[in-house]
Length: 146
Image 1 (cartoon, rainbow, N blue to C red):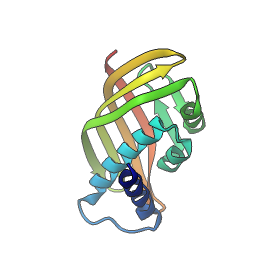
Image 2: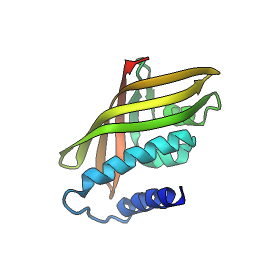
Image 3: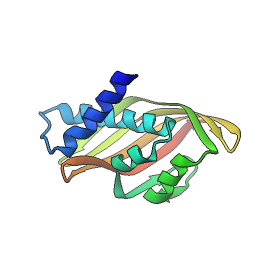
């Protein structure tokens, strides 16, 4: 667990230092950032998610709810929401200059307002590389099953 946390911190520090990524490693960095995102949601670490999202971040949930960054981050701190499982798989990273679109399958499980949920769906996250770091500017999820 400590190694995972150290690796995550190191990955966040590299873009902040303005280090150029070697060819081919941008994709690996984005996959790692996606996994860090999930860990931050499980631990309800809105500060970590704030570092991963752009100022104009927009989130579209599986049920059609659209939230801007501030509301999204408040939701992470909501004690009525407790995710116990958050994972991603089958990720694909498509690069467009300093923009990346990451798609994949997610699984999230936990409770919301005391009611259990178990969602499997697809996600699309749009990331931009600006100011020496990656930031997610848009996220969209769609359920595969309830």
